[in-house]
Amino acid sequence: MADESLVKLATSLAIVAVAMMLAAWRLARGTGVRAGAPVVASDVGIEAAATLEDDTLGLRGRPDYLVRERGRGRIYPVEVKPTRDARVLYESDALQLATYMVLTEARYGSAFAGYGVVRYRSAEFRVDLTAELRRRCLAARDGVRSARRAASVHRSHAIAARCAACAVRPVCGEALVGGSV
Ligand code: SF4
Image 1 (cartoon, rainbow, N blue to C red):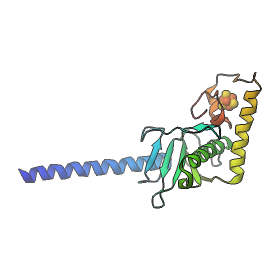
Image 2 (image 1 turned 30 degrees about the vertical axis):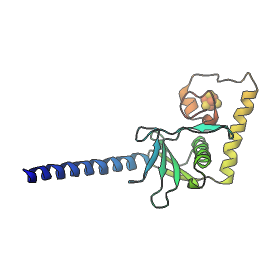
Image 3 (image 1 turned 90 degrees about the vertical axis):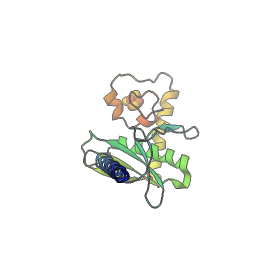
Image 4 (image 1 turned 60 degrees about the vertical axis):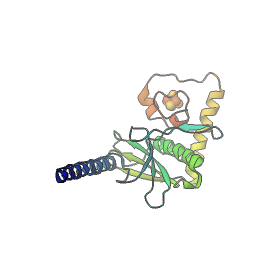
């Protein structure tokens, strides 16, 4: 009887192990998140979502994943665009990721890895948070702030796809799709 219980337990553990390996493989294949890489937060249901915001910077956003590096333990954001099939990173996506990187740095300080990842359907881009990219990100933020100050400037359409492709979406207060302030 005891042997039978042990066999059942071993079988259950084996099934759980295979299921976990399959889940890691699916995550890695679909998102670019390395198999076994610890996910700190997720906007797609794997872990609790993390809304990153910084009032001083005037930025707010929710990356698809916050992932911890294996080994060094540093944290970086991952943004996944499964319907995007391009070999070159869109400027709007670079700015969106830059916003998440600036916010990750603001929250985690020196634990921020210094880069982020954008994953398209069949391409992956590792993007360093360079001084130039940071400047472009903050310039986009300033552009949106200026537009807001111009009182009469509001969204003039109801096209979610337009917002989805917009370079200033991460810092726009009237975007029709997620990740905006
Ligand atoms: S995110 Fe949408 S509402 Fe905001 S500026 Fe871009 S297109 Fe306009």
